[in-house]
Amino acid sequence: MNATIEIEEKTFGNKHLFRDVKFSLQDGEKVGFIGRNGEGKTTLFRILNGDDTDFQGAITLSRGTVMIATRQEHHGFESMTAMEYILQDLPEYSRLKHIMDTYPAEMGDNIRKIYEYSEALERFDHLGYYNIEAEVVQVLESFQLGDKADALLSELSGGQKRLIEVAKVMLSRAHIALIDEPTNHMDYVAKDTFLQWMQSAKETVLVITHDRDVLQKVDRIIELKDQKIISFKGNYDAYLAKNASSTSNQMNEFELTQRRITNLKAKVIEYQRFKEKARDPGTIQKFKRLEQQAREELAALQQIDKPTFWIDRESMSGLGLKTGEQYEKFKAKNIRLHGAKASEGHGRLLMDVSKVSLGYDNPLFHDITFQVREGETVEIRGRNGAGKTTLIKALLATAQHKTLPCKVFAGDIEVSQKISVGVYQQEVSPELFGKTLYDAIEALYLSRDLPIGETKIRQLMSDYLFMPSDSALPVGQLSGGQKARLQLIAMLANNPSLLVLDEPTNHLDLPSIEEMEQALKKYRGAILYVSHDSYFRRALGGTIVQLSL
Image 1 (cartoon, rainbow, N blue to C red):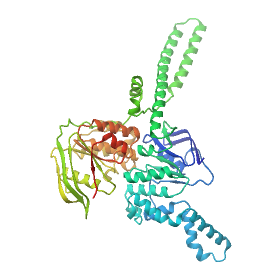
Image 2 (cartoon, one colour; image 1 turned 120 degrees about the vertical axis):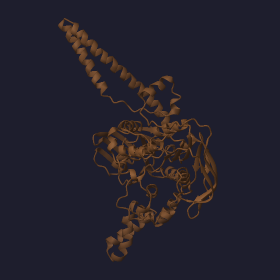
Image 3 (cartoon, rainbow, N blue to C red; image 1 turned 45 degrees about the horizontal axis):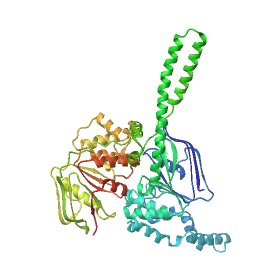
């Protein structure tokens, strides 16, 4: 056993994140960690790696266990190169390298230092560090970052830093690897590299992810729900089946509890009336006692919080009418997409791309030809760096009658004059970072000359699962999931006839991903998207435009 986690209680401000959380991690197992956005998954990671000690409980590691985790922030590391950053975080590397570099010049006849130097050489070799720089470059190349080994961290994008973190963990040879959303910025080739490593690695891997391709390859899934940890043995398919069964049972129990509450309320009133009508002291005491017992049971039942209910749609379809009706009544609230039903499509041509080659100093791709008609779905596919984002920016610039941000080497792009475009981007615009969530939503609508008021803003926040207290949060401090939901609000604000989606499932939890997929299936406008989520691609389908030189 690598680790045992027991957390009696963890709070964040006035909010309880965990109560009586208990689970263990076994040698070499691969565990997916899921939960709704805001439930506290990243906080639990911070507790495990020692960054957060403000909790009641204990984390017990087997003797000698080495743990490594991906970082969210890189303050203080900006002046390091990617190579230096990865190497300094590898277990024992810095200490051993210091001994090997400094002792030869200073140890002389010092027996202790000679022994330490000899031990360091042997340990360095045992850990495979003599070839580690070549391994770093090899892994970075698999993530298309081979030319970034000597780049400063301050020069890298957020997505590139996330890949650097994953590379660091893959090379660490630690006993336990904690990885937070590793595939969010990976293309399909890089993701396959990561999955192959994860499945063959000797390390115990605990990975926060809602990437169903990753969850399909794990040994166990643990879910953080209603302040508790629930463990599901098996992969994603097994989780869906077991979750559907356990959720159905929970709904039955909850419905019985609600019926009992209704009956007890009626009993309290009934005993009160009997007590008031009675004249015999013994009878009065009897109904007084019964009323008190009913009140006590009622109070206890009313203290029970409503569980969070979610069943995926495919499993739901096989559970029968009664369970379906229960689920509609009790299910957890999911995002409600506004503007996701454009006017009925009649095949109107929205975009016509003919033999286009785009790039900067040189073309990124050649002779791309496709059309986008109302009601159609088109997927832009290619490796990172193949020009997907460049093509999308060129299409948007043409639609907005702006100068293209790249060079057109050949071909033509024509866009309908009546097109209305909604864009889902991976990154929130920096100009919104200093605004509160409330002000950012207002600014998004006003910048497009769309009507907006307090009632509409509050409704949008509610429909996209923001709490009233979130309205004052600066956009720069929102979680990845919260920023993703803000991007959905921005995309759908003007009821677009064409949706442009760039990796839309990043940072969304499983229920929200499914809600988005279902809404997009009903959308009657056109969809142009980029995604390396194979489940999402299968759900949306469409014509594939492959970018390559």
